[in-house]
Length: 315
Image 1: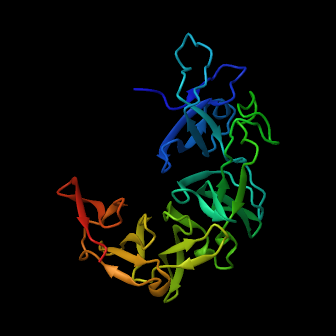
Image 2: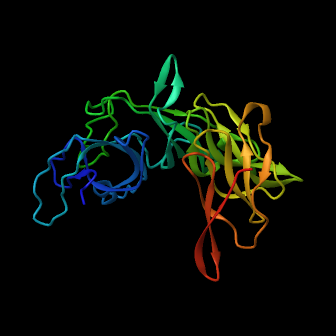
Image 3: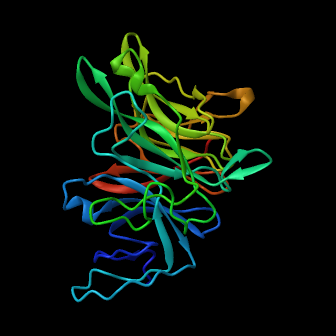
């Protein structure tokens, strides 16, 4: 067993090491980069327990000082935060208080110019004004990850200070892709679900609401790295849980409210076509994943009080 990231909770802190806990780790296609969400121990003690998104670059170990209490440890990676959460976002701005539901965008990043740009997408919690009171909703953001994450950016030191969070490296760029929180109908504000992108980095799947018969219903949407947002599903009753993009980008798998598993086409000539892969079931499918060759959808159902594993084909 080896530590992935280094931790140093004793000032002065260490660039490339964090001061809290990383979780929900996800390697990229190369296995060199590992994304995660994070909570900072130092800032939590000051009343700011803000969920952030970061990345570890394996192969560059960061030494840290010994700690008699055993809280410090040395990992095999250089680790930084990519987000700049703030405790009280200004209503109507692109500031966010929480970053989560993150994923890598494409196997090699998203298309940009003649190449690709490494990036992670996440749901950021923004604030809007509702009758003079702040209201929080999630929208989709994307953050470009620089090739060199060892150089501090303009927001402060990579390792943070005793009163500030670790800051993103130079070249980190965060962009807001959706603005559902600004919808005039409050029932249609916000996105949900753990974000998942296709292998080519062209689309990011999420869940948002639409009106059906005057009622808000959750459906699958696809968001591009340029900010285009297109509805992908339109089944009665809508979807539940987290959608999953197939690695080849042909479809998004999701569970319907009646418990059936669907595959929604993301191909240009059949966009949104729904294929019902399983019959309805009172025990809803969840934890949907797609095989690396995109030929199999695997999920859990609770049977007799026990979680079991099931599979189906997307056609």
